[in-house]
Length: 208
Image 1: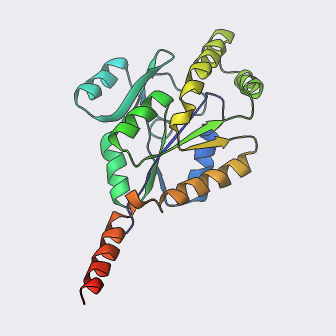
Image 2 (image 1 turned 30 degrees about the vertical axis):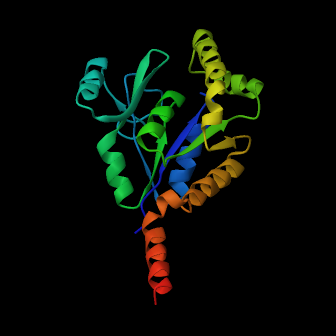
Image 3 (image 1 turned 90 degrees about the vertical axis):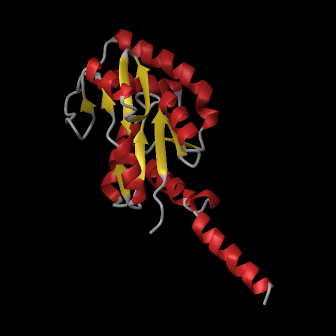
């Protein structure tokens, strides 16, 4: 059984990373989605335990004290965090675990899991990003401005990612991201047992 990969998917708010992740989960059975914990309020249609674990600030900070997160961060006044135990259990079982997290959290994951694959999702242009945020109809003009300001800051960290996924057409984006994840399984870091076996066999043959 192959070791599962840890896949971090980040992107600007409004880039469509949530839709991308839903499509990946729907189409392929070798992925496990890590459900994040947050202190923000649920949006229409979001479900407890599926979209997020919605908790109070006090509950979140208690989990921090118990070292229960792989990473956590604050974003637009709310906490977001990735529970540790579930992620590691799924990877051991051979599942590729997808984390949909913000750029701050992605950097923390990279430090803890250097072999994680980091994918940044972006729309084709800044103008389309603003149009998507406005089209949601769920946020005030003030919040949209904060998200655009935040996007400008996040753009400075895109080079730290392994891949960029431009989400212009969702079908194309899903196909491209699937290819990125599958390619990651051929990296030497995820094939140490195989490499060791080949090396041992070669050394044995060299002495015969």
